[in-house]
Amino acid sequence: MRRPARTDPRVDLVLAAACGVAALVCLVLPAPPRGAAAAALRTTLVAPLASMQVKAELSRRAFLAHDAALRIADSVTLRSQRLTGVEEENERLRKLLGLASALKWGFIPAEALQGRGLGDDFTVTLSAGKSAGVESLSPVVTTEGLVGMVERADDSFSLAIFWPHPDFRVSAMAADGSAFGIVTGHRAEGASKYFLELHSVPLRSPLKAGTLVVSSGLGGVYPRGIPIGVVVSEMKTTEGFAKSYLMRPMVSLPDISSVFILTPERARAGVENVWATGANVDSIRKAMVAAGDSMRGRRDTIAKSLVRRDTIAKTAVKRDTLAKTPVKRDTAVKAPGKRIP
Image (tube, rainbow, N blue to C red; front, side, top):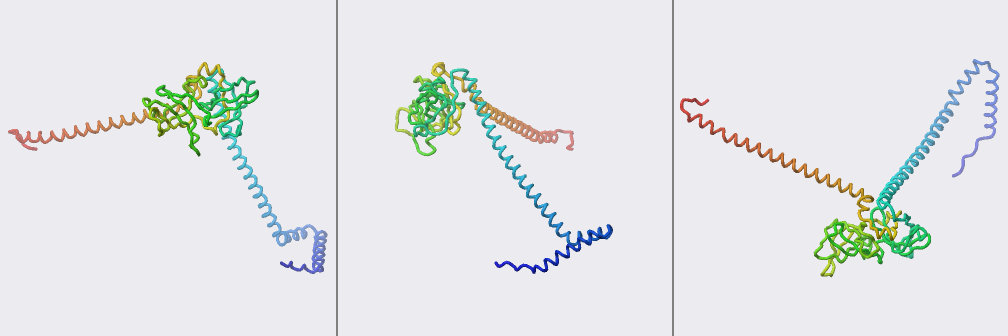
């Protein structure tokens, strides 16, 4: 687009000269006329410019206030995200302290380092090795239950396999001791590979959905009483003398960060009732709440039954009263010497 032509320079010179003359006149004028002239200029020529300056200042303040509000909102969002992470970390540490208090001795804390080991999805490097007392075939546990086993221990680090690993095996039993079997990873694709399988359960010992399965202590690697998973459903197999069950693991792989490695002495001494007294307090509390809700529901049912029974009794009394009223009237009619009211 073509720019418009500039005004004649002579016009600019004339305007500049007029402004200079007006300024000189204002300087030589006495105070009252000079104040009147200044007021006239302010109300005519300067007023639009002052109005534009006021609007510009308000726009600048609004822009700065908007930026400040955005910074405050971003800061609040960032702090809330950090606070959520801190709360989750505190909850995880409290659970770890509870498990450590329940174990008391014979465990080595370690961090599960992110990344794959030896090209396997279910192999992880732990930040503790032989120098800390870690040995091969040592159980790896966390607050929820069994994580896996140390496969190889170096001086400063160790390599462990998790429960979905193809080489993972653990002798298991129902928490009440009603059935025994062998737990392995679930051989499937997709999300189903993160389940467990309980094999070789005798036909005479069926398990219901929701049954807790723990390590049995047989085999000499895993001590008795470590939670492994919960029975989900029975699996269809070709075995005619035993049953197999699909299990949901107690430990979720994405949640594994800090673990405890049990020493051989602690494994031989046993860990029975450790998770019931220390690490699974939340689960016990939830079970107690559920039991309380069940008792309240049963109490409400009994109360409703009593109310219903009282209503039936009152109805029966009222019916008997209505039934007896005509009998009294008939008696009054048949009785001699009495008038019917």
